[in-house]
Each structure stands twice: as C-alpha cells, then as structure tokens.
Length: 129
Image (cartoon, rainbow, N blue to C red):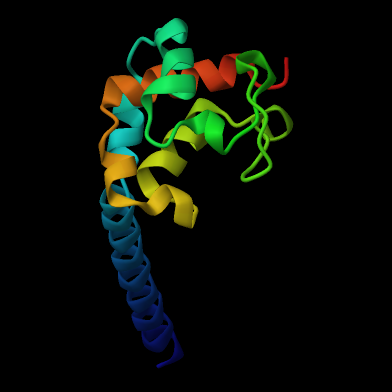
C-alpha cells in the first residue's frame, strides 16, 4: 500500500513539475526571450550603436544614463560605466521594461532588432573604459 501511494505521489509530482516547466517556457516567450536571442544573434555596428545612444533614441539613452565613452553624464538612472551591463541585460531591459522608464510603449517598440543589437553591443563594448 505504501509503495502504491509513493508511486502515485511521484507521478503527481512529476506531472506538476512538467506543467510548471511548460508554464515557465510560455512566460519566457511572452516576455521576449525569443526576441532577445534573435537580437543577440545579429552582427552589430558599434558606430551606429553610439549614434543611437547619443542622438536617435527618444528620449536618448544619454539623457538618463552616464557612459564616459559617449561623454554622457546623468544622475537620473544607472551609470553604465559602473553597472557594465552585458548586451543580454541591455536588450532584456529595453524589451522587457525592467524599470518604469523602460516600460513606455513607444520607447520599447520604436527600436528594431538591429537597433537593439547595435546599441547593446556598443554599450557592452565600451562601458567601464
């Protein structure tokens, strides 16, 4: 009897874990995980990334984030020379809106995958220089 109960318990736990894994996979896709990987697979242009950082984005990244390579100083948001975010973290932040500032509809969606790749790889390459 104990063995039958243990078997049923193991099966129930296994089913629950598989269901949970499926849920996590759905949530990952819903939060842009597939897009992040797609962006990170693109070749990046660092000069274009710097232009995006300084001039193209609205508002500009430089208006909120300090980055010495770009000559940007701000006290509004994180100092990228200090945090030195990876390209993955930068893309996730811009796609997923990890902060209220990055959660503005027009802000996140105005950047193409190529824009995101250029910008994130630029920041990753120069932050902390």
